[in-house]
Image (cartoon, rainbow over all chains, first blue to last red; front, side, top):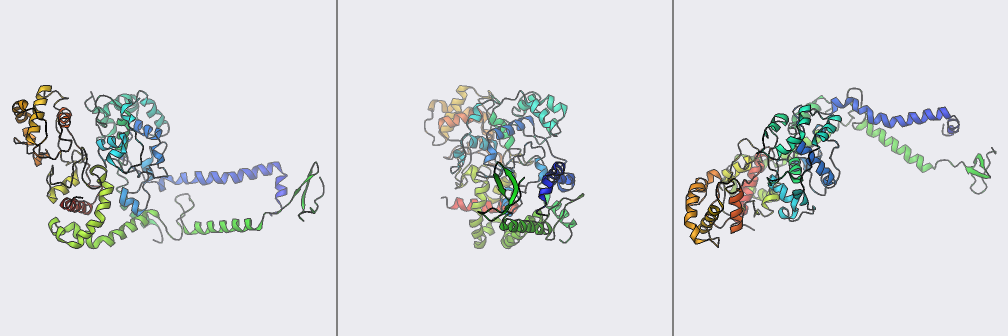
Amino acid sequence: MLNNHAKLERNAIGFVIAIILVGSIGGLVEIAPLFTIDDTVEDAPDMRLYTPLELAGRNIYIREGCYACHSQMVRTLRDEVERYGPYSLAVESKYDHPMLWGSKRTGPDLARIGNKYSDQWHTAHLINPRDVVPESVMPRYAWLMRSELQYDDMDLHLKAMRNVGVPYTNEMIENAVADTLRQATPDANNAFDVFERYGDETNLRYFDGDRRAVTEMDALVAYLQILGRLTDAAGAMPQETAKISDEEPGQ
Amino acid sequence: MTKAERDPHTGRMTTGHEWNGITELNTPVPKPVWFFLTLGTLCAVIMWILFPTWPTVESYTKGLLGVDQRSSVEESLKNAAGYRADWTTTLESADVAALQADAAIMAHVGKTGPRLFEDNCAACHGVNATGAKGYPNLVDDQWLWGGDPDAIMETLRVGINAPHQQTRNSLMPAFGRDGMLSVEQRRQVVSYIQSLSTSPGADLEKVAPGKEIFIDHCASCHGADGMGLEASGAPNLTDDFWIYGGDIQSITETIYNGRQGWMPHWEGRLSVADRKLLTLYILELGKDPK
């Protein structure tokens, strides 16, 4: 057989078919698992969506390259679960386009950072990390406090997310720009409408403590405070795992 | 096309092609390449048999070893809890006074406490628990919500102004920003507060009118004597301990903007044993501050 390649190489149609066959193996390996995704990835029906302000914060997180030093993925290892909390589930990033799991930790993992520290701490830490953690090597992001958030196009961001499968409603998209302002300005008119659209658990605060403007700091802190808080699926996991392993033969 | 012939330099056959006098050697693939390729394929096949690999129509191949990362992490967590059970069960059941007298438990607290504190508390309160502006010192003898073990445990559980249903609430109003006190009134009350403690620079003429404003606006939380009230988490203003600073500028800022400090709640993130261990650790640090 090893010496028969000469025959194949001299037959144009045969060679093209061979290339297609070999090439399709790669495609098959990537596509076939998607057909079983309902059985292999858990569902979280209670999962809430990113609000426009949090989505804007996520965009800043991406813009500033936070993912280069911070992962958002607690692996299934004892030390990680004991330090950060329940291991990450695939479903937790189902509205993340793109996902920000990351692969390098110069800083700690952020998958469970939401509600772990106060807004005040996050703001102080982003302005100058050394003020609160003297041994930190993180760069300063003080300008986030000074630059006003550009949010007049948040409806388009929500629309783009809807195009890739995030179930934003028409009402959410129509109110996206106003909701961005409302979430960071609890005293504003109709601020509580945000609860109606995104759930009672939504954080409505002056995130950076500055009441005069909605800054990029507001958006980023709002995003950090929601990390790991979109669903409780991960916290309820041990029982689920037990159920899965019971079904497995030979356990 | 020329005939395949033996190359005199290498002793190999040529392919039989010839391009302007240049011929091509038909060298076979070297043996080591075949060897490692076969070995690699063999290893892969063994792995496919042993570990979860291929998707099937409804599920995936589970592998003979039955390896599942989720159950292995659950198992290692369970084992770890088992190793610790001999002292964590005592930690959960016994009361704090008994635990403080138990040298074996306190040895565990001394070993595990620092890691737990660094991972969760040190970001705000500092590695030595000495606090910073806005974050209370935990090793002094001043406590906003009470310094007995039960009070500390409760603060850890529900937090302060945190998103927990039963959180402790303490909101100092923004007397300046919300227009409750005029500039002059604020100056007067700042002077009075300075006169309560050893903060220097009090304007003595303003102390008397300041006291009246204090009684009207501040005493309901801080007490008529300014000694604070643990029930509302209002700090004592007559001592030398200041969370947000005791100089004239800091006090003025506090009265203008109010203060709504936020301590996170740890129920759901840390277990009862973890929180008790932290309480013991903080109390121990307070005995002998670094």
